[in-house]
Amino acid sequence: MTRAVRKPAAERSHELLRKQRAWIAEYGEEPSVRELAGAVGISPSTASLHLTRMREDGIDIGTRGVRSRRCPHCGR
Image 1: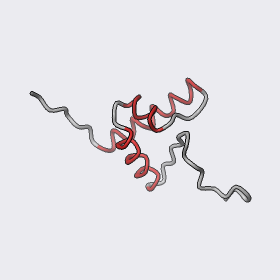
Image 2: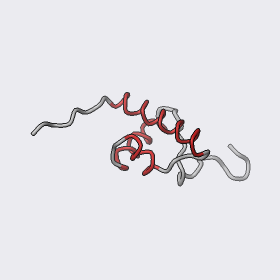
Image 3: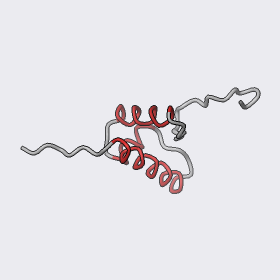
């Protein structure tokens, strides 16, 4: 039995970003975490982990169902 070859985290993050942009171009809205994970071929929990790390690094990838961190009153 052969083991699956893992991709580096940076490569997977870039793939998430590419798939998210392609999804928006095709459907006109942001994908959910499950839809994005399915498009990349990883589990939703792994996708969520990568998205959290990317957001901590300042790369804000929007997904449906994630609340904005902006104030609803002033927009900051």
